[in-house]
Amino acid sequence: MTEPTERTGEVMATGLSDEEVAARLADGRANRTEADTSQTWGRILRRNALTRLNFLLLVLGAATLATGALPDATFLAVAVINTVVGAVEESRAKRQLDRLAVVSAPRARAVRAGAIVDLAVEDLVLDDLLELRPGDQLAVDVVVLEGSAEVDESLTTGESEPVAKGVGDDLLSGTWVVAGVVRARVTRVGRDSYANRLAAEARRFSLAGSELVAAVNRVLRWVTWAMVVIGPVLFWRQVQHEPWRVAVRLSVAGHRDRVAPRPQRRDHLALYLGSGAPEDPGGPAIAEATDATAPDWTVEASVPFSSARKWSAVRVADHGTWVLGAPEMVTAIDPDDLRPLAETWAETGSRVLALARGAAPLEGDQLPGDLRLVALVALAERIRPTVAATIAYFGDQGVTLRVISGDAVATVRAIARAVGVPDAERAVDARDLRPDDEGFAEVVESSRVFGRTTPEVKREMVTALRARGHTVAMTGDG
Image 1 (spheres, rainbow, N blue to C red):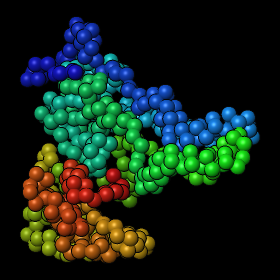
Image 2: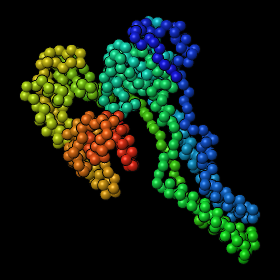
Image 3: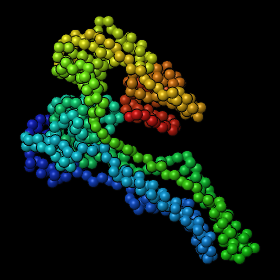
Image 4: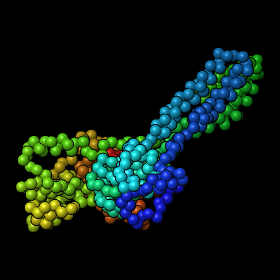
């Protein structure tokens, strides 16, 4: 277990010395680990060979071979095929799980002995000082010492919007820096880092249960016990009229008819984690198109969008400061206060943004004080024509739906109402929910639509529904 040292209070301007790095490498405090395999090849073979169905077939096959009737024992091929197919499927799952990784960044930028050096992520050690810039993926867990940044945590938490981080905040391995520059100290490496613990959890192999497989196994269990009783009776009946060799073959044939192998599909549950460019690839295209329409506009300063601020801004030479964001943030100082109009539009299912302009310059991440509203922009949601029919079908099948979203409650309510989700009018603002409250499970049970829901609350909702005996499945775009 790697634990942070006592160097948490000092700003390590020069980073670790060569001697400190060597000491940490020597005692195992480096970012090196061997990935645990999901399961062994031997375990895969045993699980697929030592099955109840194969046992029944082998017993019947041995009895048939004892009579010397080799052609009648060809059904043993079923046991071989069943074993091979199952082993191949699980082997493919094993290879996928063993390759699973959250971190794809091969290099990192560290400060050592006063100089910035480019290192392989395996060479990072506990307490290393890292310099993180936009586009960098964290290979280790760190705490911010200097600067501020916005971090994409979608791979680890499911949060789609960048999260603002400052001095004292923890940054988890597997996340991306999308804006800002920080210096941060490494707090966890190797197996103890968040990304490695997440990958190790995902590599745990388990067979997904299904009603069909469970039913087949129950039938096979009943047939096994029935054979114990029926087998001797059937053999005794046949031996009264035929030689023992013929009686054995007829008895085996009778049992084969009753134990015809059913194909079993083994579904493998794994967590697939991908990684890609941390920045929106559409951004450069939009920027180029904007430059073409306004070639004389020169950007002097900008503030990127973040879910914490809910707005972005740009300062343009000779054209003032422009701010785009949530109406409740941008129009807070507007004398006409058009927020009621924005809320009315949101009730129709549109996402509403406010565009404002001011003359004051940008100062950090603070809104200028002289903003005037220029426009409200309503972005209409495009609903697929088959959604309403699909939701109605689920209702006919006895499946109860919950719409759980991070969008504004009014927007989620309007969309849910448009597609026919029952009780959409009673949408709940998940910011008011506390998973540790006694009434949390009751609210989740009785409500159908939730807005402004965080990933943590979504997880607690699933837990609460399962605790009440529900079988829960989720789908989404996160």
